[in-house]
Amino acid sequence: MRVVSGIQPTGGLHLGNLLGAILRWVRMQEEAECLFFLADLHALTIDVDPQELRSNIREMAAALIASGIDPKKSILFQQSAIPAHAELAWILQCTARVGWLNRMTQFKEKSGKSREGASVGLYTYPVLQAADVLLYRATHVPVGEDQKQHLELARDIAIKFNTDYDVELFVPPEPYIPAGAAARIMSLRDGSAKMSKSDPSDMSRINLTDSDDQISQKIRKAKTDPEPLPDDPALLDGRPEAKNLVGIYSAVTGESVEQVLSRFAGQGFGAFKPALADALVALLHPLRSRLEELRNDPAELDRLLADGSARAASLGQPVLKQAYSAVGLPR
Image (cartoon, rainbow, N blue to C red; front, side, top):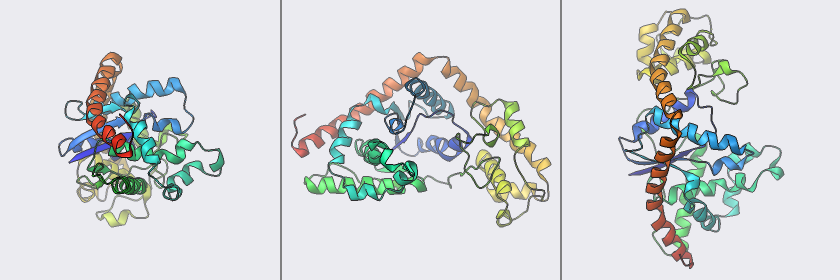
């Protein structure tokens, strides 16, 4: 089993990123051969400040390593350091069909009413995503609900290329479903909205760089309701803020929601919030300390990324060479 997944170096990582994706990556390292990349080419699909992008690449690498991604167990690399991603993407753009891309709902959502003004990259980036995966003959890709369409596209492209050129080069990847449900972390100010760095209120999220005091303050001021916690998870339905805080506690401690409620049933948030804050501080304090160490050693971060990129390139180069050969181009 080989798993490939990427994350855009956009900066501003928060608890939702950590519990919803990054810690799942950490667990994957024990279950499969993993390649994790900083998707800096994908970051160019919208306007981005070059200086900020350069800074965010190191910051994201530091955050991933601090969170538990081990460059010795996994291959951690920078997408743009490997030209084969862009080269294969062009070949696959000539395999993909316009009708397939027209069905991608994320382009419609991200371009909004200004579709004519959106970049071509925003339209075609699902093909680059396919190249990211097919280049390494990944067998599995971890996907959320919003990326299932893109995985299907990658499978369609792989099958069509293999059929068109009568080769068995690309592996149609399967979705990777790690053990346990993915944590869906919502805003601390609105339990019906996802936790997001784009929310104008910093009180809506726990940033990975927040101090212990800031974490405690944000949890103390998190929106709740006056009712005590129930003993049945079903009774949290219709109480989005309560359900979110219980879900965060469950994700942080590894306990089931049922176990959390059995301990706090009948108690109000005056008792629950301090326990939640303590659990978050215990999780994030060592992570933040490690992040600071890595930030202070940019040369080591660059070395780790360069090493990961060299390892990834050695895996991807033979596949690209075969793709060139299949379509009749010298390499």
